[in-house]
Length: 209
Image (cartoon, rainbow, N blue to C red; front, side, top):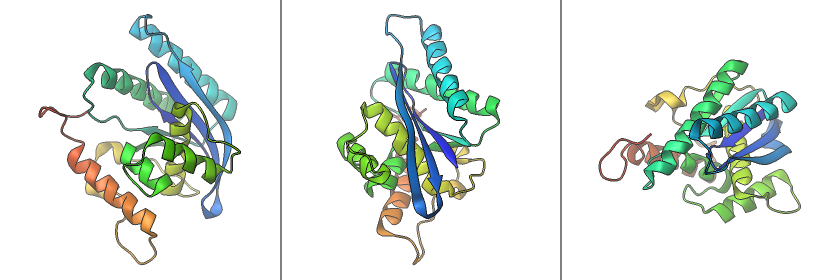
């Protein structure tokens, strides 16, 4: 299964493509970052990101798309742009008729590092190891996109089904109990449940995106 992972951002949008096989094996196909200038009108910036995204999809023909879910941040302007790009990704997946996965930042971190609060450098290092790369993928946005793709591959298995996680609900949470779970998988499930409880409320009492 080929997966396109996206780390949404208006100035820098990370895109990472991986091939996933049996036994949690994943292979790098491409990693890149689409950029748009801050002095350009927002709708034209979104068009630039959309064009870059569609070009990657046309070249690599993924079987599924995964995007990092947007949660409340202190910078409202930043989170608004990120949410807009996430919407562009969702629309592109829908137009292509592809399954869509939406993963929280803590879920992605826990999946690839075993720690839902891991820093960017730790995520880069683990993505390097998982994909067997000579050096950590750069820039960081591309590494984050690859982490999203890997996390989706490991969550969905070799046959991805349409993901309902964006609608919320306990039924979309990863399994937290069972003797077959590894410590990293238990931490992943715990991080996801924690983010669902805390992420819905933005600083100051507002709702998250």
